[in-house]
Length: 253
Image (cartoon, rainbow, N blue to C red; front, side, top):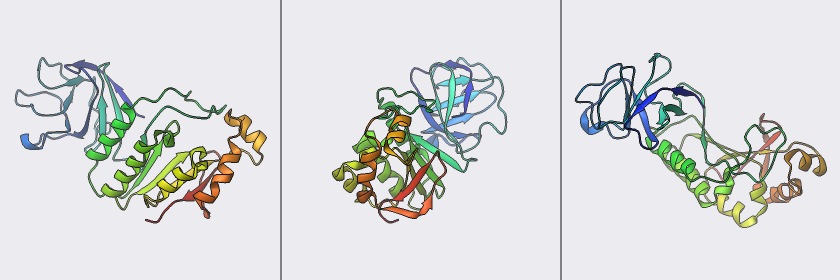
C-alpha cells in the first residue's frame, strides 16, 4: 500500500474518498477528496482536502503535504486520510492489480509471512465496502480479495463478493486464501451459490501434508483443503504464481 505522510487539520477519524485534482460542483463533492495547492474559502462539502499550503479552514478535513507530485495523486484514486497525518492509497487507477484487504486475522502461521496475524478489526471490511462504493460502476479490471485469511470474515466475506459482482459484473475476481474454510461443506456451498465466477488462489506449499503443515504452522491444514476440493471443483486449466497456489473456480460468470 502506497503511503504519503503529512500534517492534519480537523481529521478526527479516517476519511475515505475518491481523489479529484480539479474542483467539482458543490452537489458532487460528497465522497470526493480534493487535491489542490491552495484551499479556497468555498472549498466546502468535500470529504477532505490534500494540499501543500497549511490552512485554518475549520470545516473540511485537511492534510498538508510537502509536494503534490503530478504522478502521485491521480483522478479516481481512492485514499484514506488518517488523524496521524498519512494518506493511504486503497485503490490506484494507474495500477492493473488492486486489492481489497479484509482482515489481519488468519488461521495459519506461515513461516514466510511478513504479516503476523492480529484479531479481526471491522474497520477493514468497512473500508472495502467504501472503496467498492466509490469505485466507478462497471470496473472491468482485476479485483483481488485478500487478508489475513479473508474467508474468516464469513458473511461479510460473502457480502463483499456479492457487491463486487453486482457493481462490477465484468471485473475479474480473485481471492487469495489458504482454503481451510472450504473444508466446511456448508460454507463452500454457500459461496458457490453466490455464482460470482471468482477464482480462488489456494496456497499449497508442499506435496506432503507433514511438510505443508510445518510451513504454515498449523497441524491438519493440508488434509482439510484436500477433502474440501470436492466442493471447490478445482480446474486444472488455471494456474497461479503466488507461492505455490492452485487456482479453482466457483460458479460461473
